[in-house]
Length: 171
Image (cartoon, rainbow, N blue to C red; front, side, top):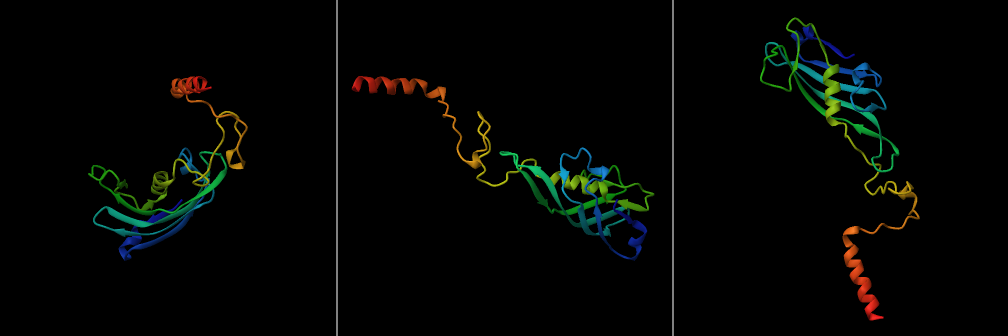
């Protein structure tokens, strides 16, 4: 996991760089599957007594399926992250990560997990004009049209009947 020694902050900001494995247990039940490890790069600074500010980037690819045609995809996610860590559990900032007052190390793992959960798109498409599958026969419409006849919309039935009646009267 990605841990930072807080005692090193006495000498100034700490550059953080590391990799979190795609199969790391922190990603279990996260709602997505990583296609490659997460690259973490950033800087940790002290921002007051018991407060630490980390800003940097995460970068990885997520394995996904097209919402319309189920094609396998890889989606790159690379969010810019700004995170506040604090020893004050009763603080008014709900977005802050709470750190034990006697901690000597800061584990960035939970922050990495939560930030990825926020940025991974819940649905993706392989391309904007993906036509997906025919809802009746299941043919991939990206490969060409299917043999299914279009269903008539029942809301237009009376108008179709009127059109047919006029056509019959005209003959």
